[in-house]
Image 1 (cartoon, one colour):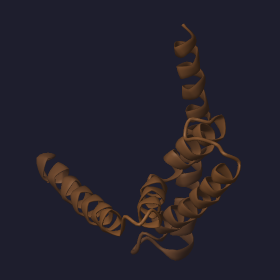
Image 2 (spheres, one colour):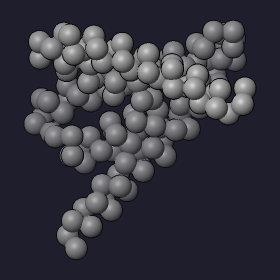
Image 3 (cartoon, helix red, strand yellow):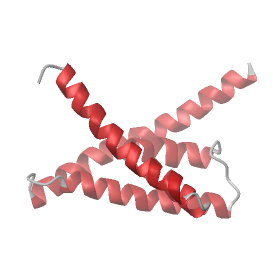
Image 4 (tube, rainbow, N blue to C red):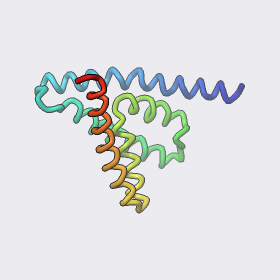
Length: 131
């Protein structure tokens, strides 16, 4: 029963972060798009870059204070808020961790595989959807 309660609390923390991150992504993306135009995805770029910066701050804070990926701080801010604000922030942090650990080939592989497979998957999904 204790594990279920912890799972529910963890899920509530992630959800609470997402409740803020999701609409913020929408509003920032919309405001930037209205300000600079929609011909280039400036809104998405700003969201992704700002989310990556915040993920870096969160990771530095967590490392400095000995917080794990299962800590309340991480679940609320990184997994919940930043996970819904942008998923590229997780990709960037994981790739940086590989590079910092001396795993430059794995970091490059993660970049190539993630971008290539994601673009390929969206293209396949688009074709499968009939367009």
